Image (cartoon, rainbow, N blue to C red; front, side, top):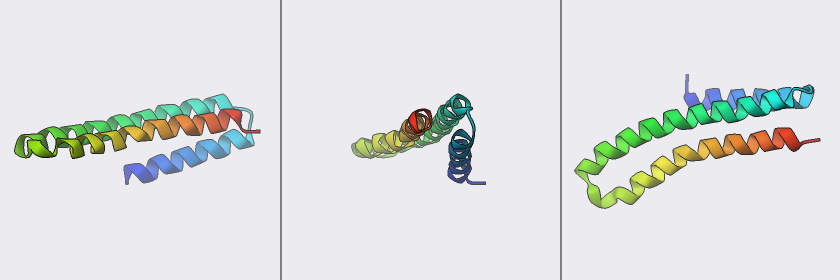
Length: 89
């Protein structure tokens, strides 16, 4: 199964769980944790590909950094979702 789809389903389920019950701390922790795992996997794959591409075309290194930064943004999204869970009504 696609990793992004699985992460989206998990974050949606956590958001629904936090709104339905009082276990919002568990939902927020899972949001940050699973987003961190997803970002780690993404950075690992993108970083390995960037290093191997850097050997072939070093003049395009800025694009490789952008791809790694896009993978790291997943962790920030998880943090934002956890803040939404914690501070929502």
